[in-house]
Image (cartoon, rainbow, N blue to C red):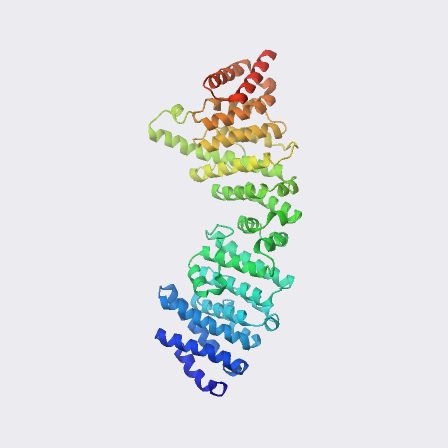
Length: 527
């Protein structure tokens, strides 16, 4: 076989790119087995074979993307041949040939670059650690150098990074950090493009199936999956992507631009219990900035949802305690802005329905005092409602973090009243329930809360048509009454007593209703 290999190669590489799929497939099969028999004696023919494999990969990818079922099989054959070539050829021969195209040199189109990256990935997979580790840094630099707007190219870049990680395992700390940083940056690009499910759904066997990877490369969801698989390879033996991201969270977040996309990618995939305390503080501080500076309700809702997820871990809330008051104020500010933006939609819907405002879901659309901080989000009322919902949830997570310490902030008390008042005016039942819960815990945890303001917001909610809202308002009344003190008039208390009497007579309220009634009667006696 070795004696005749040189005679066969020119014809076989020519037939490898024949227009007939059957001829190409049989040529690839023969080249694969001839390579295994010839071993290191293929060095002289490696350059010609490599160019043929790249060209075959390019055309196969194009066929597969156009829906030709033969494309996937031909691509698999080209990758097997490339992997076999990588077993016997020193990377010093093929690294200089491939890296300019891999890095996206001027004039390189998507198909050419995709084929070259796919072949590089297969070569790395077949290469021994002793050979590849000498060139790993150079290869990773090339993979990082050429960002692309093509999900196919990004998927293949992630695949190549995973192949390098698997072949060079165990990785040096520097190489591990470079690979993980590159993969996370690809995930940030995919998140920005709309693929926001993190971590992505588990897809097994991606590293064994180049054709499947090309199919996933049709959209950015596939990029997320390819990166997640590659991160597992980068974590080395016994590790996983979540632990790797957790350990490197601090350096990653300090090195990034602090954008919401980076925070989403890192924090949603990390094992929060393993994130260092300094990284926790950095993360929460960056989240507070994202919430406070959000230009649209959609971005605010994303940031607030992530903050709620992160702070649901009690250890995270403990380490970030000094930042929580500022984050609470930013969340309450978003609740006010979101509720003000959603109120316009509610008012328009009431008018379109042709009904009277007081008869719509049992509440009145009220005018709420605006607060400083950028005005309401009136251009996107649906997103504004989502932002208000997320803001109240985040505020509730902060207020129920398990600590008994009073939250002190110059603006928090005033913002609490404005947020509860504006939110209770909305048509969304769940938002009104959340507003009552925020009032309940805010009255207990915040210092300097004007009890009379909260009382004026929560007490009317006892007449809400939705039972869930009435129950939430009743639960909020006890701590609100304790803070109301002399700010509450006899007339207000008499009105509250009447509503409580009606609830109890209707069989609602239970023991809590009677307890609140007793508290109201005691306050009336003291006046």
